[in-house]
Structures are given as C-alpha cells and as structure tokens.
Length: 303
Length: 303
Figure 1 (cartoon, rainbow over the protein chains, first blue to last red):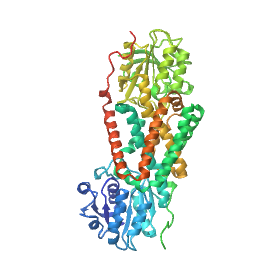
Figure 2: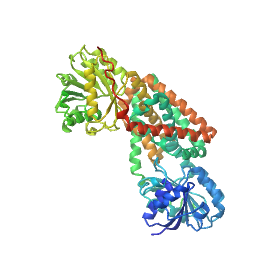
Figure 3: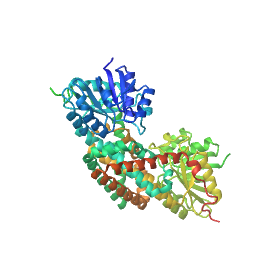
C-alpha cells in the first residue's frame, strides 16, 4: 500500500539509501527524489535504484514531497532545518536518522512553519561502510529504531513514520529525545571513543607489531572505522552526555586497574562473571527487541 | 606424514581440541590421549573425535607421548609444570597455548629434567565459545601463532612445533616471551579490560535499556563473554604489562575527553581520521600475516 507518494531523500548514503530501498520494495513509497551534499553520490543512488530522480538542491528535492527523510550527520541535519524550514508547507512531514536527537528536534521545531510535522528517528543499526553502494535492503531487520516525535507531530504523522519503520523490519521504540541522547552516549558514543583511545594506545605500545593482534582487537575497534565527520558531529552535539559517560567509564576502569594492581583474584573473577552475565543478557534482549517495546497510543502529539 | 606418534592433550577444550582435529586431519598426529580437569570434557572430546583415548590423570596422559600439548589457562599451565616436570623424560617435547608466555616458560624450564624440550606457543585466534563441542577444524586458518622456544628447545623441537602450526593453517611468529607479553597486554588484555569497564559503565548508565544498543556495542564488548577464569589468570600473571597498557589507555582517553569538553571540532575529526587509518592498516596487515613473518633459522636453541 502506498503510504508516501513522493519521498525527498536528503542524503543518499548507507542509512537513507537502505531505508529508501526497503520502502520501495514494500510498495510503501512510490517515487524518491534524491539530493546529496556529494554530487557523485546522487549518480550512484540513481544507478543503484535508490532514487528515481535527482534534485540539484535540497530545496528542489523537498518541493511537493509528502515526506522528507533527512539522512545526514547531526550537524548537517540541523543546518538543513534553517535552510528548508521556511520553505516547507503545512502537511509535509519530516523525519531524520541522526545519532543525536535533542538538538535536531530543537532545530527543526524552531525552523518550520506551523503545520509542518517533525518526527525524529534513529535506527540502532548500521555498518562501518558508507555511501549509496553500501546501501542494501534488510539493513535494519530486527533492529530497534528510536522515534522521538516533536511537539509539532500529530499522531497521524508519528504513526506514518512508525509504519515505515516496521516495513524496514525494525521495531519502533518511543523515547524522549534527551533520554535517547543519554542512552546512546553510554551504548554507542562511549564505545566509539573507547575504541579510538584503544587503537591509539595499542599503536603506541605495539608499534609495527599491531598486525599481530587477534580477532578480539578487531571486534573491539571495528567501530573506529566509521565516519570521522559523523563522530565529530556527535561529540559536538551530545557533549554533556558523552562527558558523563566517559567519566563513569573512567571510574569503572580505575576500579578494574586497582583489582589488577592488587592481584585480587577472586574479585577479578567475580567481576568478569558479572559482566559476562550482563553482556549475555544483552544478546537475548536484542533478539527480543521487537516484542519488548511497543509504541504508546499517542506519544507526545499535540492536541 | 606422521610427525607425532602419540600426542598428550592436556585440556580438551576449544583451543586444544581444534589443534588436535587439524593435526589429525592433516595426518600429522597418529593418536591423541586426552585429559581434562573437567571429567565430562574428556567424554565429549572422545565423542567429537578429538581424542582416541582418555587418561585418568595428566601423568597417565603424558607417559609415552612424544609431544605434550598443554591447552589450559595460564595458571593451570604453570601448575602442570611442577606436577609433570619431574616425570617427563629426555626427548619429550612440550608446548602450550597460554595467553602469557614469560611465567609459563619460567615454570616449565625450571621444572623439567634436562633433555625435555619446551616450546611456548600462543595462537592469536579463538572465540568467546569454550569446550570440546566448540572445537573445530580451521579455527586458526590465517591467524598468527606466536612461538617462544625455551632455552631447552633444540632447533628440531622448535621446527616440529612450527610445522604443526603451519598444518593448522596458522603462521608461526617467533617472539621473545617478554616481548609477546607486552604486545598482548596492549592488543588483547587491554581490550578485554576496556570491554569489561564498558559493560559495567553502560549497565550503570542505561539500566534496563541496555538492550536498545546497536551492533557497535555488541562488537566492542563481545570479548567480555570469554572465560572469566582465563582472564583472571591473565591479569594475575601479566600484571605489570597490563598496568602499563591501562595507563597508556587512560592517558589517551583523557586526551579524547579534553577535545570533547573543549568542542575541538577540527582536532576530533583529525584524530578520528588518523585512528581509522591505523585500524584499516590492521585489517590489511592481518590478511598478509602469513607472508609478513618467517621463523629465524635457529631462534634461541641451546647448542
């Protein structure tokens, strides 16, 4: 069933491209008009069947679109609000996929005219790969997908975006923007910065022998392969939550160091057991994501 | 070609079991006699075809073996030296797979009678799984496998173990024990402890919502699923190198925190670019491991 006649895709890379492919395959989106800050990406997106028409500017792309999907790093997502907000018309719905939600919601709610509805989104899945050539159907299968509707969003707009999320195989999870930002600071931004510090430290300590590392090192630092610009933006826009997470991490690390320094065998084994148990539950919880959360009837819609 | 008539396998779990399967498949080992500290593991190892005969004690297993493979956590590997050293006879060769090499070499070189030859080993591969049921052929395909021959080891003994390593599809890399231990402190032990602190911190910060994390968190913390006893032993036996690695990591983490706190956009992006480049080279280096290192003609053999 067609839910969206004309989708404006601003950012034709891995995330936006994969969503556009899923939605077209499900028959939910009839036509996609694409624009990207990297002109070559638009050509690739056309060739990959992600979009059917290329726009020369974001303004051109959003004209006449019933849904606008902004699939860009946080700062670019905020910047597009100021640029496009005045032009968007009542009845147009905007959603995004940026990794930090509070500043994005603030920017779009401030910039848009009344009647334009903003539903913030963040799929908790992805890859260290990037660009339209990395986009694929099913990327979000089984993943949680956070939705943070703005005050401007009606229940109808929120339900439209939630339906699209489900068509991509993901489970909508409704969270207030600030709660989302604190959560991803702990579970995504902190692991990235820890991986960055790990690679730096291991390179300093191991020098040219870093290649002798085993799979554990590769797993632990894979996230450091993903986009430097995206992560720079995340650090700038979610600063306070990230600093709090880093400080909590440093305290935990200091506690581990103290146990190692003192040779506390029983306490080390106990700590490793507790952490293994917590991490195992995570695996089970992820498998059950689709059942564990359901959207509220009418989350934060205005009357 | 048969290189080993009778292999004594002390520890029939993931690592020892996988090596025994590889060597038998290659026709290099004729018979495997197994013992494990967990009696049920021996039965499983028989059922899985890892061993052909079960021994009631390590003493019984090593009697008449031309090669002894100790596949146990570090502390158990050291403890077996004192127990078996006096019994082993000239001409018998011992190798191990423990994650820390200096204390293992010291224990076996001290305990064994003259003529018993010890070649320390450490395959830089594995899995968070454990036990004979997790053992499989090809686990070490393409991995680096550090060899640290003791002063007791002749070139013939060292070359025998290196040949077995190659038959498992791995690349022997000769390193002094202390150099190995400093290297794995940085590339393996530090990532584990960092993952432990990450899980602790994220659980504290995210509470019940930890299941909402994305693949990056799962990758970054997978290593925390592996054996608590193994990691406890590693922390106890490689303490100084681990403390040095933790301190280097803490300095790097503090530097990252300072950039985030000060909102240094350009420097954050530059750091993320440098780290991504270092991490990418790691991927290439691993693919080239088999070519990048070759054993010295006669590493540290005594005359």
